[in-house]
View (cartoon, rainbow, N blue to C red):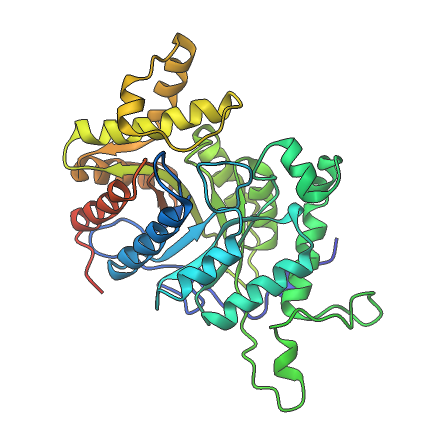
Length: 379
């Protein structure tokens, strides 16, 4: 694998206060750590993808106005209830409607793509929204095996995951435009990108999006630590691995040009409502959606009425109970208490909240209530 630790020279995040390149955020109000958003751009029954995308814009604008640090979307495929199959396209749309909040992928599933394509897409986003773009990378397919095979045009899916460190090294070389002389790609440039700053008369900014590694187990935690990169862990669907993965990341961490100390955020499912009953009513829609997904029946997010009337089998009920035990929900005060406890227990440097519900109104209401409960300022 190429040595990529020294290649992240264009990022200068350091521990402490919010950094210029946006890796380290600053806590606002009474929040224990910076707060951010992971938007799955969910599509509910009776709703269109157009409506879901408009809600995404509304969420980004609301959370920007309340001082949330970043807004990320995640790559998913062949899931009717999730409209985020093309993160770069979606982020370009969000960038046109926001001014300050950081925007990024949580994440792009790198084995699904040629590294040069991702470097070009995120170089374009960086040119659209300078200094606001994050490139979060995962090695899972973001879908089922058959769809992954269609995306990658191969059924040898294990190769993509096994080759992830090499793909990552190649991507960073493209982002930095610094393949060594004699390399087959030495004369290939990701555009927009740093090459435009070195061309005669070039005035292009040399800055490029910081790279994050995402994971739900120990592989990416160790790799992120070894390379001195920021790390994002999917606590919202792999809570049993959160503390071990964060410990592994911190133990493996080696200072780099990017960070001199570890920085880890965790994704958290959380939804606040005006009362506990309404919060339970809303989060049950996401739980039923997960039941269907895990049993090979992915669909649109069911309505609260359908979820309330659904006859769960004993096995499904056990799954739902386990799933909801990891969703911080209730009144705003109860959610704040749960988030505080989670930050304390994990030592996470940032909490990235994902609010899964049938309608956009409930998700917007949730982010507003959480912002109010933490006393976040209106920016």
